[in-house]
Image 1 (tube, helix red, strand yellow):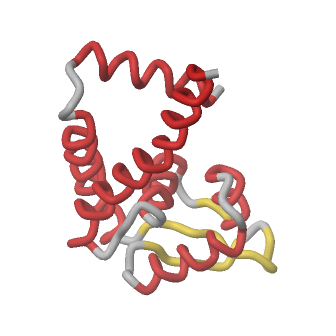
Image 2 (spheres, rainbow, N blue to C red; image 1 turned 180 degrees about the horizontal axis):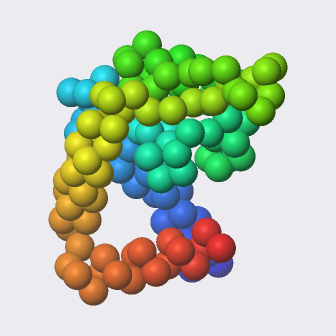
Amino acid sequence: MENDKNESDSLKQLASVSRRYIKLVDNYLAPHQLNSSLYYYILKLHDYGDLPQEKLVQLTGVNASNVTRAIKKLIDSQYLKRKENPNDRRGYVLSLTQEGHAIYPIIIEALQQANTAFFAPLNTEEQKSFIASLNKLSD
């Protein structure tokens, strides 16, 4: 019974750990008017090229209305542009602007810095174990 309580208390820390990581990412991205809920759209468009908005919804697993809000912010920040979809006149295709392409390596660097800060309390072996455990739990 005592062991169940300890496991339950430890699992409650997952939310705290997640918030800590998100805060780190947000801090590193803030100078670029980005945050943890925006940057990955830029990464997806960089990796996949121009995409219909519906495809971004599928790739990210994020609610369509949240994607719409994020896309609007990224267009307003001039990281993305929307153009008519030549294959479907009812929809739009999203693509990175020149600024969007330029911010990509900055995002990668910011994520590396956030990861370094996040994992700082752990030695290399603990980091590998933590990552392996997360991967196992997320399958």
